Structure formats: C-alpha cells, structure tokens
Image (cartoon, rainbow, N blue to C red; front, side, top):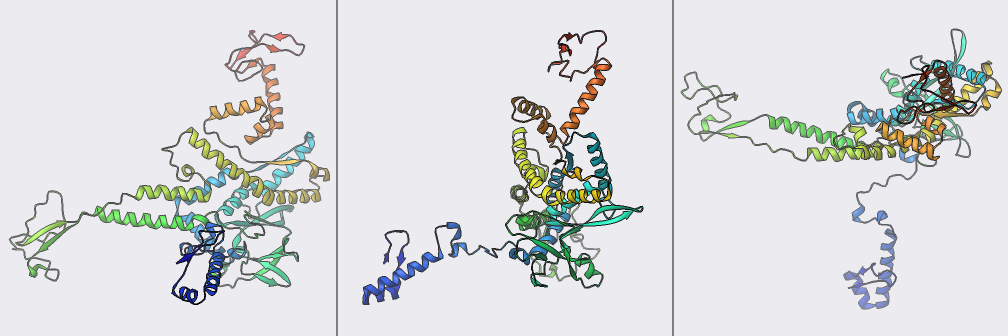
Length: 522
C-alpha cells in the first residue's frame, strides 16, 4: 500500500507493517504518520539530483566547505605529492614546463608609453640595473625569478618574494628573496597575539585585509633534518609579495595545479608498473616438467647421476635443444595472458590528466599522430585564453605590479628616477605566441589589421614587441635603404604583395621610378 501527494506524485510513501496497523486502528493517525515520514524524506533530498543523500550518493566526500578550512589539513600533503609527481612523472614535468613557458617564457617585460626619449632612456637604464641585481642570491636575473616564481606556483601552489635592500660593491640595491610556501606556518590557525590568523596569514580586525605572515626563517623540513626545532615569527606584509591563484573568495593560500589529478596520475603509474611487471613475466617463456613418479617430486635430489640414461634435468631451454625426459614425465608450457587494454587506458588517463592540469593532450604527451591544423589551433586558442587569464589576472597584479612599485619608490629615493617618471603609463608585454602555421596565422592577422578588428599596435604587441619602438626602427631603416638606393621585395612602399615593382610617391606628389639604374633589388 502506498500514497502520493497531489503536488508531487513521484514522492510516494510505502506503508510498512507498523504503519498499516496504526492506519487500521486510526486512519487519521495513519495519514499523519505517512505525512511526517514523507516530509522527513523530502528534507533529505531537495530539487537537485547532485545533492541527493541516499545510498547512491554514499561515495561522495563532502569535506569542508570553507576555502581555508579545506586546505588546513591537506596543504602540506598536496605540496609533497605534487613535487614527487613532477620529479618522477614525465607528463607532469612536461605540463609544468609547457605552462611556465607560455606564461612567462623569457620574461614578461615592461613597455613605457612615453614619447620623451630622455625619460624613456632613464626608465630603461634604471630597469636594466634592477633586472640584473633583482635576485638576492645573485644566481639569476629578474626574468629568471619570474620563471622560478610561476613554475613554483603551478607546481606547489604559491611563492613568497621578500624585499631586501643591501649593497653591492658599496652601492645600494633592491633585490628579492624567493621562498616556497613551506615557509608560511600553516599550523598558525586561530587567534595569535590578538590577531585572527588563517593558515599562517595574519588578518586585520575586519578579517579581509592581510596584515602579515608567520614565517619560518628556513624551510621546516631542512630545520628538522638538521636537528633544529622550527619556530615561526610574525613578519608584516610590507615588502612581501605573495603569488598564488585565487580560486575562491576569501582564499589566503594557494594549492597545486595537480590537485584534481594527483590520484588519477598515481593510479595510472601503479597500473603502468603492474602492466610492465606482467609483460616481463610473460616474456619469460616458462616450461614445467610434470611426472607421475612421486620419487621425482620437488623434494627429491634435483642433481641426477652422471650415468643417468635420460640425461640431466631440464633446467634451461636453449635454441636447438633436444631433451629426453624420464619415463612418466611431460612438459607443459605457460601461456600468460596479454593485456590489450593498456593503450586505451593510457590514452584516457593522459587525456584526463592533461584536462585537469590545464594543458592540451598533445602538449602534455607530445603525441601529434592524430593532430592537424584545425585541431591544434582549436586546442591552442582555448589554452591561450587560459594562459592570458593567468598572466593578466594573477601574475601581473600579484607579482609584477607590487615589484614595479617597489622599483619606482627605491629609484626615486636614490635619485635614479624622478617623481614624474612614476606617472608614465606602462603595460606588461607577455611573450609572443608562436604560430601553428606561420603563413595562415600571419594572413589572418593581416586581415584583422586591414579590417580594423585589430590595431597595428595590438598586432605588434601580440608578437612581444614595442609598437612605438618598431615604428622608429622601420623609419630608420627605410631611410637608410632609400639613401643607399636599396629596394627590398618586402617593402610595401616599393613592391606589391606579389613582389612586383610599383611607383613610389615622392613628397611633392610626383612618382619616382624605382626601376632606375640607381636602385638595386634584394
């Protein structure tokens, strides 16, 4: 027996024996009992299939819903497993290389928007000096620090750059010390010294603005290895650059890009190892000698006498072997099964891992067997959109802008720059995107510029160049070519797109014959 509600006919309630007994004695009590049970069932399951709480959803691990609480117990484990993955898994190592190379390449460089050549030269001179001495360890330059910081962010989730002011050869310098996220004491969770602290990040009273960090002076793993007890101390946020990807509002720490696929890649590694071991066993062509004579069992002496008419026991099979067996013995050969699902499982696992990390399958594996121009371009466009988002929404505002502001303040204080230089507009130019098919991509860019969909400045900047410097360079060399009577077939002033000579308009409006004897074509 069952009843349904008028509003929800699917929400049926089935009477058990106790309900039927109550309903038989008192129908009103039975109906009330059924309504109460139906309300209880509906409270366990709302209108979303993904939020059901019955036995079908028993495998869901809900965990914590807080951005920081979810990281509190898992952050060190995620870091360690991600690093182990990059050390030992070629796909993980290549994925990190790909994402870093496209995000920063050889450096995201500044481009100052000023027509004052003296001012531009002053800014560029001060910047070059900073780039060369930006690393406090004096191992790499500022662009190498970019690569190191972004690589570490992708692999372990976050980095710290501590501002240091020292002297090199008696001259004051501005430099940074790059530290891994391990230096933040994530066990500092709660109230310390009257300040709320989340995962080692100290907050202001409004709980929204970062006040500082509890930092270890050295990596706690190294300290323990040396027999020291690591102790963290409070460091104000001034002079500290904290780079990580913010995925949720109120998130104060970063985590590895491998978090969604750590278990997937580990399962594949275990499956691969098992398949290799199985293949090694299958490669051992085994034969087993069985006998009906109990005296020749496993416990008998395996070494026959030299006068045995049947010859020695069969211990090793060699090419061309003719072996006589004892009476009652026979040979059975092993027939190991062959795993035919390894290739398909590898493909699916690698595709899932690449998607979880954020790279395309061909980028992660180098497998271009089924690739063509259309598929490569489609995958590259999506990947490019993701990388540009990381560049302009994470790397520039969280790493480059704070450091550039320190650069301005330091050089103005030292007299290398003037206060007016800080007002010069500046944009960060990321590395250029390499074309899949240079001719097709270049023609598409040319059409975009000619149709007005993209400006010349945007076109030049997309290749990692300064459009203003490019114009000056073109004008300089065009004049040099004209003064020496040289005509290049790539000069649109003198030749057509097909390389044919065309008349060049002189300043007075007359045409100049570029086919004269004074012009040489290269």
